[in-house]
Length: 345
Length: 70
Ligand code: SF4
Ligand SMILES: [Zn+2]
Ligand SMILES: [Zn+2]
Image 1 (cartoon, rainbow over the protein chains, first blue to last red):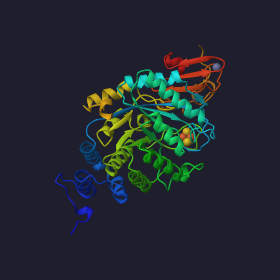
Image 2 (spheres, protein in one colour):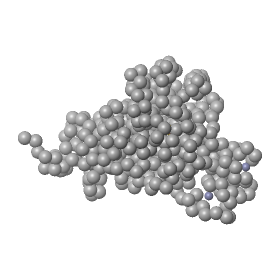
Image 3 (tube, each protein chain N blue to C red):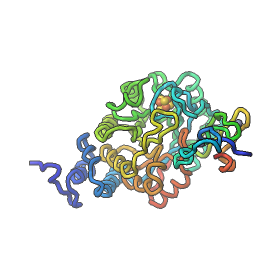
């Protein structure tokens, strides 16, 4: 007979869902279900530290101590025809962001600066519904120029929704990973985006996966979603089995429909990080945008000790981050090794 | 250079409420408006900095005096 979850007690003295997670996720590597993730999200705050400690153990057991460091850059900023309500780059909202293109020398320089931080991953991003021929050729020329610069950093792209032909082209260019965020739970997506569907995004992700590229897919928390929807999102991501999940915390952007939303509280952000780790024990979980505002320096460290095993260093696409060196120092203080390029080849 | 307009909202430094522009969140924002003429600038953020260009007053970058940029 199996004990009901609240009657379980682990060797570590944990009870309830934490004891269940220890046996199921830590020992067997089986991610939590939707109901279980929801239980984690509803744990009393007195159990947050235990939750983070367990999430960290899970990360160490199933992913190891290394941290993947990445830099990102926007090659085409602003003027996007889509209406993602969190995004300052949508051309449909009165935000102060103006359209801009980064030229090839600028891209090469950004890739070089990223590699110099010790990062192994460089993601080229464009604010588009999907790439047109101009953008595809800019990316092709950019990657060629980065290689000619003697930079062997791994290159990822995030260019919106793709056709099969474009997927194949990116593979041929040597793009090893593709980022395309599902952004939020399927049930919440229509509240966040109306110009395309969650399913359209899912289709691009499947094509990317079938083509053998690594899938990077995450989202943003703090967009008015419920705990139930956070749990729903965690298991929907788990079902996709992405190589990487970037976690963003909403920074309310001037001129967007979400301009006046409150940022989520640090403890809630940490709880979500840990819950996602317990839903996806083997996935690379990356700190992306918004952690500076939501968590600050101390919270970022707690996140690194609560399930996170990858970070974006330096600035983001339109927002600034803290200097890359501050994060590298943090990893050094935490004695977490930075994943080396040789490991990935 | 005289800072006449707020680089975050483009309103006059002396004649508008800039409490939101002074919030912690603004430290994560590059300048968006020219401090001299309030034109919306073309801003490029890169991993290690930013460049902001006013069609009339030229370019400022993160390497410039932060006080002038903000
Ligand atoms: S598709 Fe991307 S760039 Fe365009 S509005 Fe949505 S999030 Fe912003
Ligand atoms: Zn202002
Ligand atoms: Zn100007």
